[in-house]
Figure (tube, rainbow, N blue to C red):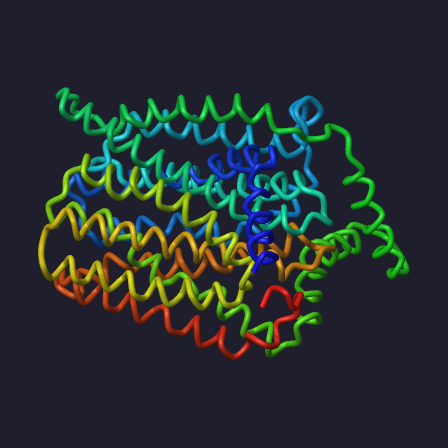
Amino acid sequence: MIEQKQNWHQLILVYKDLRMLKILLLGAISGFPWVLIASSLSLWLKEEGLSRSTIGWAGLIFGVYAFNYLWAPLIDRIQIPLITKKLGHRRGWIILMQLIILISLIVWSFIDPSQNLALLISVGLVIAIASATQDITVDALRIEQINENETKVMAAGAAMAVVGWWTGYKLGGALALFIAEVFENMGIVDYWQTTFLVLGFVIIVMNICLMCIHEPIKTDRETKQKEIDIALAKRFRSINLITKFVVYITGTIGGPIISFFKKNGFTIAVGILGFIFFFKIGEAFLGRMSIVFYKEIGFSKGQIAIYSKSLGWITTIVFTLLGGVMAMRTGTIKTMFFAGGLMALTNLLFAFLAWTGKSELLFAVAVIADDISAAFATVAFVAFISLLVDRNYTATQYALLASLGTAGRTTLASSSGALVDWLNGDWGVFFILTTLMVIPSLVFLWFIRNKIKFGKDNF
């Protein structure tokens, strides 16, 4: 018992590492753009009178997150003139993407959704692409803050990154809702457009804080990449533009994929991919339509901000950190099963809320339970993927597996609004269906649970 308490205490102390604050900031930078293209955009379109189906299909812009692994090797190699030499490779890319998002917000401030929906969604797509590209660099910079042999610190860093992401998303979302409501009460007609201009200042502050995160300006990354290319090129009798292209594709895309299937075997690899794809489908369907449901059932923007954003942020932080400790102590696989079952149960609370009608107490309970399940699920999911990657292809494999998980959440969940319309607005049945969506992923996990190749202490 004494040893167990000591181990628990040691795991908690890992979060005191100063690098955790830097990882927290990186997570917030990664999560904030989702405020713009998720809850804020959805509510903006809803208040402009657009249909649930339109709002749901607008979420297809999230699909770019599922494919950012395709250009991840380019982000690793291409250096931005002037910026890279002064700020570093990773920070340079982050700042460039933040600048693109800032410009997009300015463009949004001049658009009327009812008059030019296509342009509005196109700008949203630009934000999504910039955000997805930024995530590649944020993940790389986060990992590079921690030495490879610091396994416990790396696990804590994964939990802290999730906390940071939810901080950017939850607090940013609450800020957006409060500002929009203030401007609306002031009688400003285009209150959402004005809100996006204010949110642009948040991006500026984030870029200033980014300068506090250390990154070596000079690294041997480019040299090592060239060494790999030279080794692959030796397999060809002659070197020309075609063979150079083949070498590049093989080294950056083919290598990580072949490595993944070779390490796990074809059957287990397919099972892993199936689990990753389906794991958070139900949560995504609920999340995509949740703010529309809150609005239809009668909650104001202020109430949504308090219960769904501010209160949810506190809950998420606490249980994400606890989820990180649980994953380190009881194992990632067990934590995944626990999180999956919890997600299914919490979705039932939303069905109950839909059937009983507006209730602030039940609303608070449902949101808190949902945030707890999401916290455990996300930490376990990040840890699970981190344990799977081959250290020789960390960035590319992480981006590929994370993108696959995003693909399930974004592509299929885009039909969430159409599903509610097909159910004639029966939110209770909709939430029951989201509960059942959790089952396929847990079936995949059950069959591969004892055959996944990573350390025994993680089971």
